[in-house]
Length: 212
Image 1 (tube, one colour):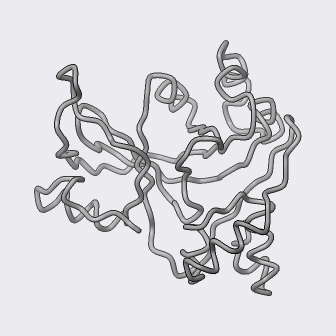
Image 2 (cartoon, one colour; image 1 turned 180 degrees about the vertical axis):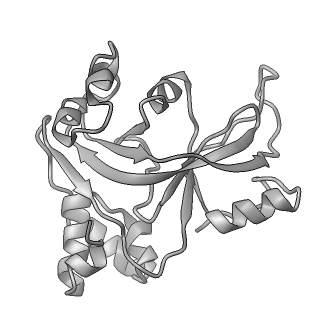
Image 3 (spheres, rainbow, N blue to C red; image 1 turned 120 degrees about the horizontal axis):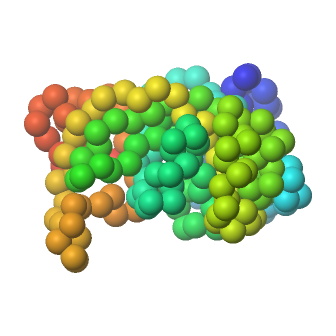
């Protein structure tokens, strides 16, 4: 799929469409070189298009020149179950979203980032009902899940995932309040190369600087 920078060569058109069509946020615009002040102004004056419940919009790569980026996300049992269908879904109403520059997804397993998976396609969905429109590989199985419509009843992001890449990087955070394995404290973005180097050096996620 054509990347966003190529599709909208005119700068103002590109920024408007990024917000309207793809729900871009301030950080997404800053990833393209827009200043913080200007990004805030754009996000305050342009609103995302409201999708119908059954509508799905495919989101192309943000553009060239950006290094591979991993979105590390907290992952509960619900999200893990849907990973078996090679997808990750996230409600758009949650405070922090996957940045458009994200090329990979990661989550913790027993206190470490065991693997990350490349994002092969990305969608903006009006609701879980739009999964049928997107026609992902395991569409029928996903829609047969009893909680899919309850879990994602309105605007959501869906990413399709490729084969895992081994990382093996401990989180380095303290155990949870019940003494269980540590967890990722919210969505954070890292360069893939930085995570791989940290794993090779015997470091941790905690000591690896995230993207700003």
